[in-house]
Image (cartoon, helix red, strand yellow):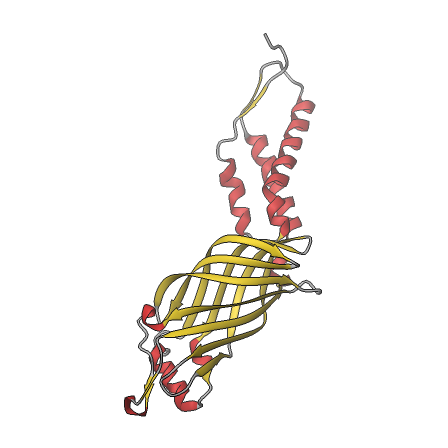
Amino acid sequence: MNNKPRVLIKIRGLLIVCQPLYTIHLSPLKQVGLQIALCRTFLNSCEITNNNNLNRKAMKRLIGIVAIGLAVAFNTSILAQTHYEVKSHNLVIEGTSNLHDWTADVENLKGNFRIKVEDNKIVDIENLTVKVDANSLKGSRGNMMNSKIYEALDSKKHPEISFELRKVNSISENQGSFRLNTTGILQVSGVNKPVNLNAVGKVLAGGDIEFTGSTKIKMSDFSVKPPTAMLGALTTGDEVTLKYTVVVERNLLSDK
């Protein structure tokens, strides 16, 4: 029969105490400190059964060890995750028509990212949200084309185009670049559709991260009627190509 001292710690509710820390906007070190404090407070309040009458010092030492271990375990991933925001972008929409090809540049774009980087390698993307001002699209054919774009997108009613990451399907490295295959929700003109988005990510020398890629979508999938002009003599194609280069930088305010 095993006669070694046994300590039974009831930790019901522990996840309720620790889980909210993932969304508190504190620096990683402050999150660790706060988590340690909460773990210690919680464990001190737990019902501890000492079958062999361990002394109080030994119990306190055990509580401290368990608290620190839990805090480190829960925060290992947090320490490696960093908030980023858009530093610069070049997003172009390319389309066709029965008379000539056309393009539209996106002037206003913002985004929030939570990216896990280890040894200058993109390990995971925890969160990614990009928002485009639909009224900032500028067509290659001037103001008349711009008005046709805004009309087609119903930009007065739906002034924002957005993409929200749902899942990172894969990340593969190739000579310092990282090929990402992701799934997310693209919202255009108030209509949400799941899309697969492939991109190439690269950690730059200063710590910024560059994403480049392209994807094709059909306007009709989002209930957008392809614009026409010249009394219907000019008709645009349903499919357009989105080409982008986005550079993100660390958001120091979010990490404080």
